[in-house]
Image (tube, rainbow, N blue to C red; front, top):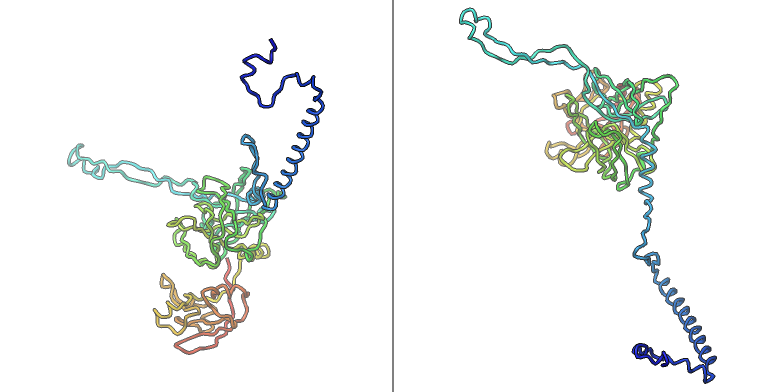
Length: 433
C-alpha cells in the first residue's frame, strides 16, 4: 500500500497537498519558482507595510518604548529632583550638628516623717503619722534640652536659634554626624532676631566641614526645600522635604520650657517640610544644597506649617561676630503696633499705616527711658509714619527699616501726634548682644 493512501494521513485533509507523483509530470521547477516568487513578494509587501505603519505611528508621536515583553522588567532611574535632594543632603549633613543642653539640677529625695514625733512621750508610741516629705540632696548634671545647628566656618563657628541656647547657666555640647562630641561656647545671642552663634572648643588646627550659605532673596513660593535636624532630640540628622508655602510672614513664637521667652519674628519663610521639636536651629536647604533658612518654629495646632528665618538675616550677624565678637543693631527704643485699616477704625486713629507707639504686654513703656527715641522727644501714642521718607507699613516694618542703618546714624521721622504731622530728628543708639 502506498503510505500516502493511508486513512490516517488522508484524514488531515491538508489543502493543496499533492502526492510525490508530481515529480513525474515535469512541473517541479515551475512549483519551485512559484514558491520562491510568492515568498519574495510576500516579504516585500510586509516590509513596505511595516515602513508605512512605522511612519504613520511616528507622525502620531507614538512612544515605541511601551511595546515590551510582559516578562521584561525595566529599571526606573531616579528623577532629577530626587537626585538633587540626595546630593543636597549628602553635601550638607556633615556640617549639621546636634546641640545638647545640660545643667546642674537639684536632686530631690523623698523621705517619710512623723510630724507628731515630739508628742510620743505624752500620748505614747502609738501616736504617730507617716507623711511623705521631700528634700534636696545636692545637684547633678542632666540633659535638659536639645536643638540643632550647622557649621558655617572651618574653625567650628555654628549658627543656631537664640532660643536653643537662651539659658546662660547651661552648658552646651555639640554632636557631629560622625558621632564625635565637643563642648561649645555661646559667642553671641542676637538681641533682635532668634539667632545665636556658638563656637566649638576643639584642638588647634582642627578643621570642620561647613555648610554653603545661599541667598534667601531668590526664594520662590512652591520651590522644593529640605529641612535637616535633631528631631525630638532622638533622631539626629532627620531629613524632611516640602515646599516654600509662603514668604514674608510675621509670627509670635513662644519658647516651650523657657520662662518668659516670647519672640516676634518678621519676614520669615513658611514651609510644609516637617519641623519638629529639636529641629530648631537646623538648616533649610534649596536643591543646590545651599542653606536658605534657619528652621525656628512650628504651629502645634496645625499640620505641616513651619517657619524658618531667611539666611540673609543671619549673614550680618555672622560677619559682626567674626569682626568684633558681638552682634550690634541700631536702636531707636520704642514699642509699637503696625497699623492696618481695622486697627485704625477700632482705636479711632488718624492713619491706617505707620508704627503706633504703645505700652508692652507687661505695661512696659512705649518709649524706653534714656533711649534715642526719648531724647528725640517721641511720646506714647505717637504714630511714626515714615523714616527717612520710607513709608512704614505691614510689609515694611519700622524694625526692618532701622536695620538698614548703623548705630550713630541720624534719621528723620515723620510723626503723627494728635492729628498733626511733625518732623523729628533722632540719632540711632546701639543695641548689642
